[in-house]
Length: 354
Ligand code: SAH
Ligand code: SF4
Picture 1 (spheres, rainbow, N blue to C red):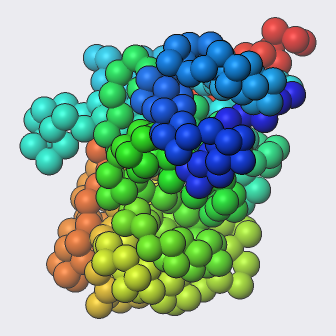
Picture 2 (spheres, protein in one colour):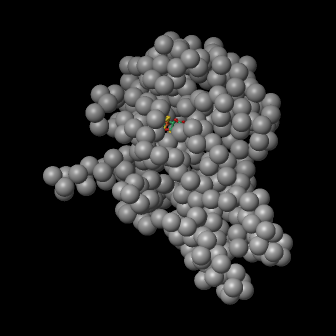
């Protein structure tokens, strides 16, 4: 299998063409074909010298993963796609076009990308976590998810909230981010990109050191360490205080606000007392809490709290001076929570196999 050209970052691509004795502008020319126009063959790059196209064809590929299945809902505003990666592996990606009723979101089109096939973190409420870990995605496979949508339409924002833990695959995640924000690449604003992590501190440090203006979301889900370890069995020795310290470091390094994600699970982490405890843990830093009413997945036995309980939790945070929002439900009909489309697909496949 030849290497995928988009596994090379912007610097690597420039170095490659320098090594091949090509003019400086070649990297920019090729990147623009591959990322802005989304072509999937070198032969489509009609302004390249024929000999260079032959050489690229010999050493690299630009093939796009095939679309296995796709679902559209919310009157066409949400599209979920499952892309095939070979060896029976697949990965899901979602595009959410926000409606014009929210002035802040006007014109926005957000792609939610995956970074791994499965996930090793094992969060008890997460469909991906329950599937276990298969493998990391390459930079090209991460970019392919955004390209899938930009070929036909637009993408203004990217959130790393699909399958997998981006900071357990930091190098590929960063390589993909570099093309997303590069002028010859997708040319997105770094501020329009958000990386969501279960809270891997080394990855957060590394991201802070990159000096990118990328947004960071830390999945907290509990106001105390015991409960957090039960919900995220691999959270291990990392405490909430340490995560708050890592968030503070990120804010200082980037000037960006950090978001804490909190999946609300009925009767588990959604009491008013827990809201007060949460507020006391994160008070005093430039943080925002994103409350995500749980999207039930088969077999977990966990439930979504009632609207009243969600509202009560939200009110306590606000009364305690914590900036908080409740995530707008999108694509609920097609189960937009991470991992679910693939689960359904895999289950359908195995049913036909039996
Ligand atoms: N691994 C990263 C990013 C992918 S998960 C992380 O955990 O942050 C993206 C977000 O979806 C996380 O905040 C995760 O906790 C949340 N999530 C996963 N399954 C969910 C479900 N069934 N209902 C609601 N939120 C869920
Ligand atoms: Fe992995 Fe995130 Fe799911 Fe946890 S919530 S299992 S870290 S994808």
